[in-house]
Length: 227
Image 1 (spheres, helix red, strand yellow):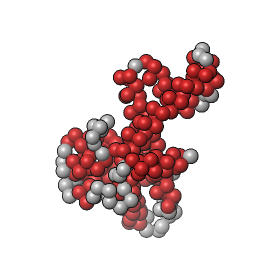
Image 2 (tube, one colour):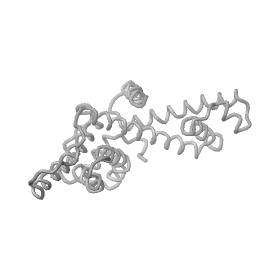
Image 3 (tube, helix red, strand yellow):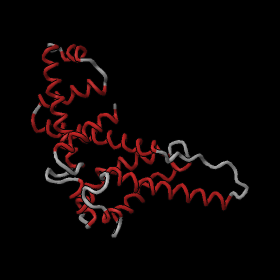
Image 4 (cartoon, helix red, strand yellow):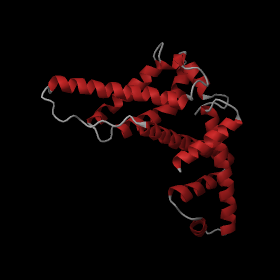
């Protein structure tokens, strides 16, 4: 996990300069997003066999000397999310086009080609949703890490959110499982939600270049994407 004073842009800067720790943080933060996007893009095609190679190529494009990260300015354009989508999409297109050329050489008769995904806006929406799920996952990891040091009651609130959202239990059902007064579980649930929002804002502050208002707007947009 990143240090409290770090942001996406400081990690990008240091990773582009070759800092080993920053490169590790960068890969840990974004590798899952890239892999999930390419896997979803290629899930019904033969290109899925190239998934590992393509993921590696994305990070080589980003981290090599003079690579894509060195051309990215903090806060530029529509942000790092759009930049990462562009790099991943370009690598995917290279793989798809290379496969098409090889198929033409080995099958000049032109049998039915493997279906390729559309590059319509739906692909960027897919990437944004994968990104949003990853941010929520990292926020949950932040919350659990804080709860581990805060003690058993804080960890119990983490479990409360898991039961509510992952297992789909109602507050009444959780109260029955815990053999606790429903009113108390409601209070703990409200506190758990506040703690999660705090963790989510902290996670978004890493990724968003701007002021607290920008973080709040990104938080709302993220939750809307998953709504």
